Length: 329
Image (cartoon, rainbow, N blue to C red; front, top):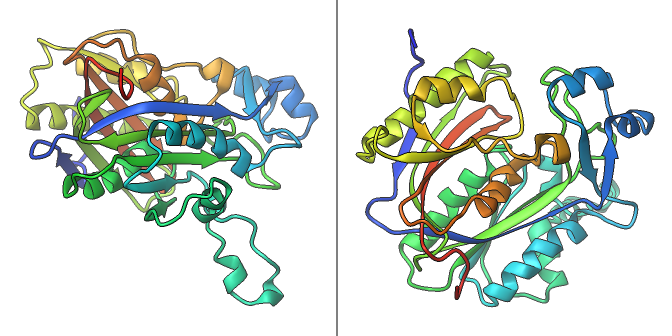
């Protein structure tokens, strides 16, 4: 590849501390619609043929009896069953609107607008005195944002694991698709645990790039992804020719990722562009779903996770499997 882009803004290696991801959970909205149904309901801004051309066929949205809080409560409750007393909680939202609960009217002053979603969720579970942190500025690169925040909490603590959660529903008055990018989304919540006990996946390294530009050409996304994977493998002293990789791509830009795989020339197992037709793009939950699905309990098996999010951000993470997947397994 000629004229490679400049290096990513940050490469972070987890070589001095061992951090592990496990206990992956997710929940989709309960209402499934095909493209025709979405169009008839006024939930598409593109024509059906344009979205179908990208490979999408269905999505999942919340029903009339659901909201963001009820959606997120499902994976969060399961994670608390595994870890009833977490050391901390880290939340991420791909939409800024998801970071707040239900703000009051403007006439009530500013305090009713400081209704953070994590606090509302913790009240539902009667969980108190646990420090929590939240973010939304990195869009659908939420898995990596969660890891970076949780890593700082875990690295200097011998305490309980950190619970990580990402949750989003379509903001009111919007559609499930993006006109220019032709991306179809689903309402989804997911989470996992990160801690020091060897299980699930060990985090090896993360590369992260951000730009102020509103639009990045697809060819640049491909080039930067290739460069960031190569940079990480070199920094981690991983010989790509001798190792097999599972490649986890987000359910967007389906034409881009075969090019990445081709340029990398990795000895790779089937790439995990997973469930695009059935569940569309699940925002930051895409890699949480595939990491759960593709764990085979083969120690040392490597996984490359590619994230792309509005903002604009491009992230790459490399993880290795542990024998144990779930807590206590």
